[in-house]
Image (cartoon, rainbow, N blue to C red; front, side, top):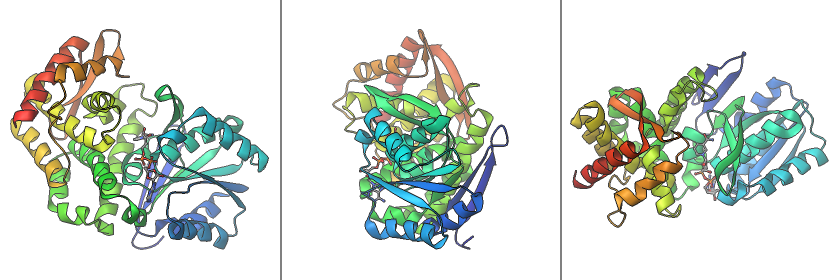
Length: 369
Ligand SMILES: NC(=O)c1ccc[n+]([C@@H]2O[C@H](COP(=O)([O-])OP(=O)(O)OC[C@H]3O[C@@H](n4cnc5c(N)ncnc54)[C@H](O)[C@@H]3O)[C@@H](O)[C@H]2O)c1
């Protein structure tokens, strides 16, 4: 592999292995990597919003490796995550003669990997797939963990767990992302650091400037670290059965309520950032977490230019009613991921009304902090 790329490998159940290559120019390794895997053909599904010179590098690598491939171009964005897109992809796969021994490659942001991953999970009862994420959110989060699916009225209603065999995260794609989208993606990196521990958060603080300048070696380390934290948790609970995986939802109970209340106008990472702070203050009240930990989390997020205060025009109790629609709710109870301290996350079960009141008090505290 290229000396500047980081290489990871995780083993899930049933000898299922997920490999990740992270670094500048990593997409040019795709052909060689896929070539070694021995598939009969490659179905490449590409987000046309990825700038042409970047796309060319990926295609050239498949050509150079002498692979048989076909390309389907689609438009990335939340509208892609639909049953209609799936039908289009399934029909295309069939028309191109792809079979069980073909590999599907998703090349785009999280909306593309969610949709194409689900097509891979279902086409001919499941074909292997690889993902080449092109946004920071997709590199640091959506590419890993095997959750695939599309929206149907609400988000991610239809889907399947289907892990990609390979993740190729090429940081060169991040240079063309709007700054708000890039910074928004950093919130998930911070979430993974809060789950991992103080050293990880201190490291982020120490490289804050490089991250904001999108220095490829630093960003690659942050992405590799994020994927590693996520995959180690996922490996303990690949299909979200034992609960461990719910820890990855830290910050997201409030984030989802905020996204709903703002009609999904607020960027996901911005909502997660505010959610991490509110839930850290909820952890102070509920679990006696050190208040300094909540302050540290807030400072790291602020250092990266992420919002940490809930919008002043939103009523907390009204907004947090959205918690009733949370996927983690079971009847009138909910399991909230909170922290005993940084690096010590825990799942806490409580009544939904109690969770709403706890988070509303923490919301007020976050406003004053
Ligand atoms: N499966 C999971 O575990 C998981 C985790 C987190 C988020 N998600 C999903 O991910 C989706 C969000 O992903 P996203 O933020 O990547 O959104 P996205 O795929 O919509 O990408 C954002 C926009 O940027 C464009 N784009 C992609 N790469 C680009 C590049 N390099 N340069 C310029 N433009 C580019 C896209 O076409 C799109 O218009 C949501 O649907 C969310 O539900 C899934």
